[in-house]
Image (cartoon, rainbow, N blue to C red; front, top):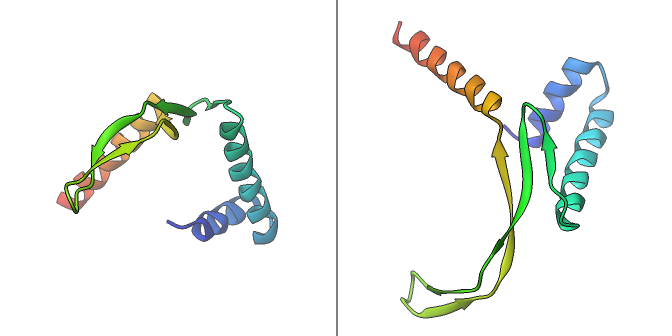
Length: 102
């Protein structure tokens, strides 16, 4: 599913225009990015949480050449799904498998 597909689904479900819906979704994305850039996490209950994790400097290997390379300290955005979200997806996938087997 692409961002355009998400815009279409949300617009159909809310009655907003696609242009209005796209602006809202873009606003959400920008808010998440800005918050993480400022070192703030975001928690959306029943959905999941966004955080930034610090990765320590380390020695790595270039898989193409085998050469050792130094990877400096850096930060990585992460997302952790809520238990409720995982349970809903798990049940949906089980139901899809059962329907396909029938």
